Amino acid sequence: MKEDFVTWHVDQWEREIPGFDRRVEGIAVRLQSLGQYLDRSRDAVLAKYDMQWWEFKTLHLLRRNGTPYQATPGELAKHLSMSPAALTNRLDALERRKYVERHHDRDDRRKVLARLTPAGLDIWQRGIGDIQDVEQSLVRALPESDQEQLETLLSALLRATEGMKESSCD
Image 1 (tube, helix red, strand yellow):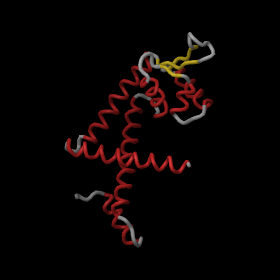
Image 2 (cartoon, rainbow, N blue to C red):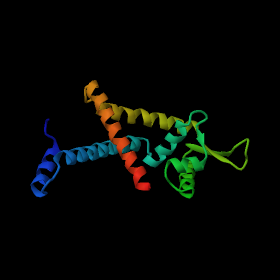
Image 3 (cartoon, helix red, strand yellow):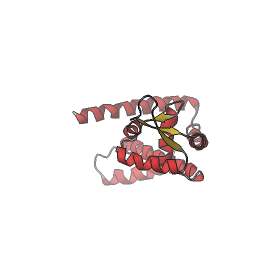
Image 4 (tube, one colour):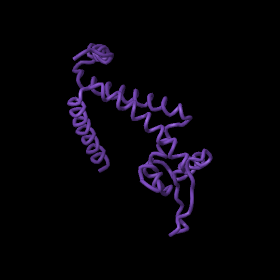
């Protein structure tokens, strides 16, 4: 394996901590570094559109629902792991930017729906295209067979953490 900056990091800690597991530390630090790289790259893409991650994520959730790209504030709050009051502030800000509009459900006037506007859909489409370009350039640095193997391994690791979350809630 070729050396990267993590190799130096692991070498340093191996000298300092008895029983240090180089492999575990190397994997954990590389995962963290790749996540930080993707976060920085995504933020740089969104800055071109004068957007923040929370704005994009909200538009992303609305777009994911399919036509007519709408959801209740409660559904959005749940998926974003936030309180309904905090989500109301987000929707207010997105409405001021003309990316989202709220209206009452025709079948149940008590229900409010947030809907992606044409401007919101346009900015989401441009942003997601650029974000996908960043992600693809990262993953395509590996041969296709390695990409498939990495996806399988990361999926197994993620499933293991999901099991850990469930057992810690018991």
